[in-house]
Length: 509
Image (cartoon, rainbow, N blue to C red; front, top):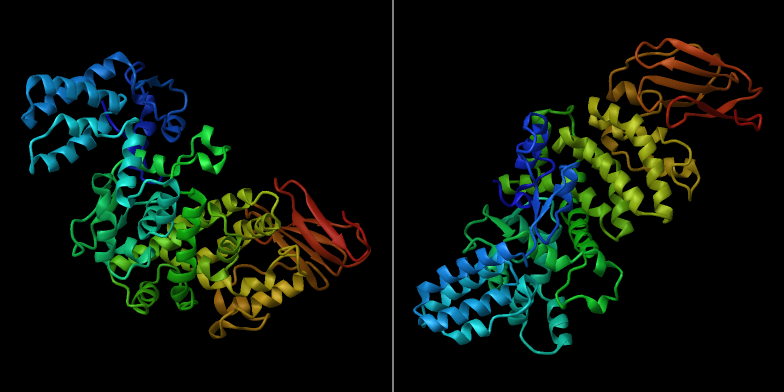
């Protein structure tokens, strides 16, 4: 039996237990694997084990309650209560726990600390919060912030540094060290963070002192995050007054993290670009790190910012961060230098941002960007990240629906750093190796494009023809005639089976 799969599931970590099981499902004999879920159904787990019907274990099931009762009775024996009080305490505690072992665990941790000061009394048990884990969590927060009025709790929590820290912890894609968390919440020092988190006690795993910067800060259990963000279906469409006093909006949490990474942490490194040297050049990365005085901890936060800022931006509600990050050319070079094997994540994040933008005008701009970046820009960047800058000269028509294409191109060209600003004729000769020369047109070539699989090139020319080339060999595959004037625009369809062209003859073919 493997318990708590949800606590160890990491989609990106090949060695995580769930991923190991999935890879070996075919070798596991039939009937030897079953998936059990509690009253907190884990969508990620069930999706991963698609096809397995889970065994549901409800908190109110007789066997579960009996097991919980035995656990509570055994633990209460160590507190010096007489038999009668002990039985009554066990009955009350089991009722308050609502079938949840974790509730009982938290309670006994709390009682263990108190029992050192005085003998446990029945009144201590009666005073515990009702409502299972949700009740326990809410009581913990109410104790921290004091007061009795609902408005009092909300107002104090809203401006408290604990809220900022919790926003980060519920949104991050991996566990953070104490040092990393202190930077993201912009605390004065790590001691402030430790003191801010201390009142949460057993709900968090935190370093006991601020002199342990590399120790992880973690929510003690996934249910804490679930309670804080509460994304259950029945709550999504209700009035916000239905949320508990300490509810965190998950979009707001992602916005807070994305805004810090994009506006505070990444700019010094983006401003250092471009770097001399191709991908994997140790000297270039050394300059990137040492130029900002980065120690090991800071390097890990830079790697986190580069890899996940896009994910936070895509899940946020700040369109300025979304647009600024995904349409910033230096981001692509930085991503390839810091996380060269994860560039596919950036494109996936761009796709997420496009879909989540819905009917927003930004969605159209992001979609144009993705259609250009994936088949055209990224293959060249993998050869030499500096190619990102002269590619600004070749941004396709319609990249920005709200501005003329030429104005957009000029804006990007102005952002090409002086150190590699070159003329149109020698841009690629200066920055990357020339692979092929495709000859066949008799007049100026006005438009080119790659097929989505990168295997073919289409070109349009003032000689009134459209030509298709083999991208690997440079061989001309087709010459398409029909236009009787200059061809200004060409492109492949999404599936690569058709070509569209626009001409000065006022026709599209």
